[in-house]
Length: 116
Image (cartoon, rainbow, N blue to C red; front, side, top):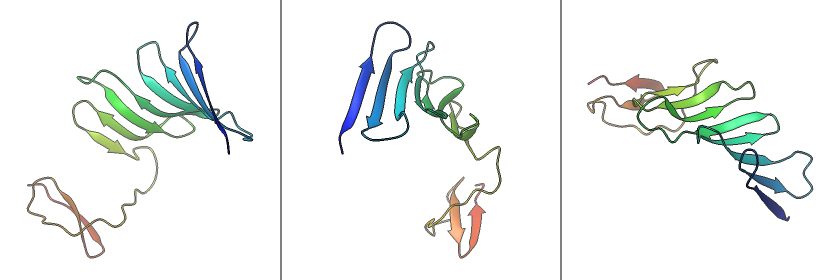
């Protein structure tokens, strides 16, 4: 299956489009926003965003169709997962040493968090 990559420099928002041949949708676009954020978007909205600012704010996020973050990484070191929806599932977490500060581990069927 052939794949097309279209690069649109110059006027407007710089953009790279990734489109598979024979697809019914428009593929995924990499856009460079006015604030220099890199934004991957589909015809349904933004999927993924990276910011060049590493000292404050969100530097990485994965979004759903409504634009809400499913995963967000803040410059402060905070990682937010599934803030706006139901349960968050973690599978195949290895058994580990719960004495390590701030560690997440599986103990049988229970999920534990050590706090130091």
